[in-house]
Length: 299
Image 1 (cartoon, rainbow, N blue to C red):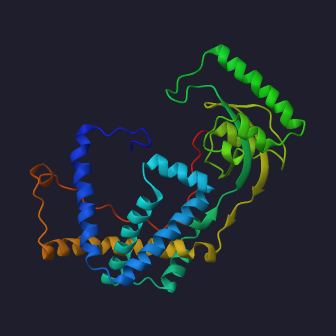
Image 2 (tube, one colour; image 1 turned 90 degrees about the vertical axis):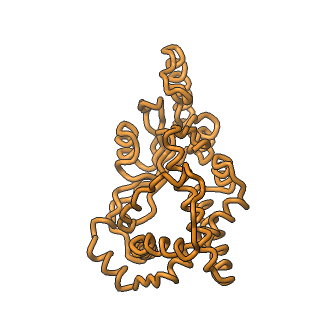
Image 3 (tube, rainbow, N blue to C red; image 1 turned 90 degrees about the horizontal axis):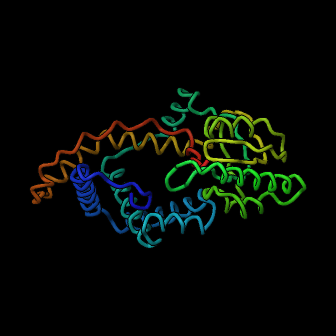
């Protein structure tokens, strides 16, 4: 929360502390049932997930930046993810959750709309912001005019053939994309309307005029467009399997954890936390079609 500049209201702290305590208790109870093989498998799974995270973020530098925001080292994150992975492995075994390939195929066939991927675009942009990134307040008119003039000069250079990605790295104020040459891949409906309306009407490698949004002034270069399509079963089967497994686990998990607490004689001795009642766990969501694309930080 601190890494995202999201202060926690004092009245929410008891519930948060109790939730964290309950999570730690669950992990300890499940770790106690883990075999050496479970722990080895959990470590391997955590390492794979960290590599997957690096791939999604784009680079080692992006991963390190995210870890810094989290206030954690790579070793700390790996240890935490390994503990969580071991708990998952133990739960699947103890609850005897068995989602079959037939179950996965049936879900895919029964929910065709979930696997329709909308038209997508891959584009680079350069953003000069017209509001203060810390407060969100509009910049004074003279500063906006100066940014507009600067963007006009950048647009001339881009249309004269200068490397668009290099221009983005040098001038763009979108911290979420500038290190990647301003590049995003996004479906219709994700970007602000003014940006999207232009991006999807450009031709490949065409550079737009200056586009004004609530964030500021943009110029956009379309790199590639992808037509709407239905995702193939082979590309989504793993996600469906994970989702259906998660649903099955969540149905059984509260009773199983309550049983483990009773067997272990778990007691909460802190009177303040003991008095806090946790809400019932939410109903498991339906399995995702694919992993959702990252939401741009500033567009």
